[in-house]
Image 1 (cartoon, rainbow, N blue to C red):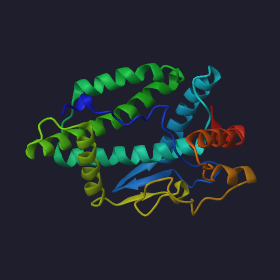
Image 2: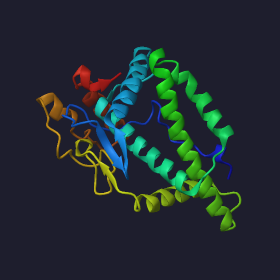
Image 3: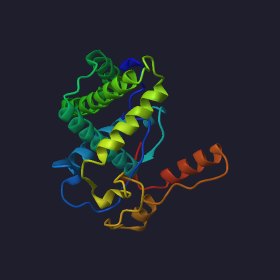
Length: 237
């Protein structure tokens, strides 16, 4: 399967997950092998995305989400990007440059909604995330081709990518700052943050799980009400 047929990770403004209202320590969001993922990078991308979401909501194109969810999304995305980078460096992996250009072209209108002073840094960080994804897709395509699968489905490619990353991750020491609630596999946002300190009743509210109901409509309504009940400085949009 050509790489440009794969639906890449949407790290823009649509799928969000994470943690706010908690004290963070230092500038280390995660360690991936000998490389550090800075908290400042997580906070920068969170700020940019929240600004875009604020504009989208003011025009009726988006609903509010917890800042906490945005932070955890970026922690996981940046950890995966670093894993991808290390895998590509180890195996000297190429990627589909045309697909990368296309992905960045599609991202540009969203980027233009960010402050001009933040665009270059954001563009570089998002391009690195996309590049890493494409490099792992290239590995998956080769593995599938070696097995005689010349035209794999997107599901087959995704499954292959998942296995490649899971296998590589076992060989790399990944440690996510406990403030982001990592699980045993160091995926952020999976458990209560053991080292974070809620600073108010609003902060405790912000780290609770969204309420669940019996129907999708109930879930959506309860979630919206829950998010709208957060303090303004703990939500985007």
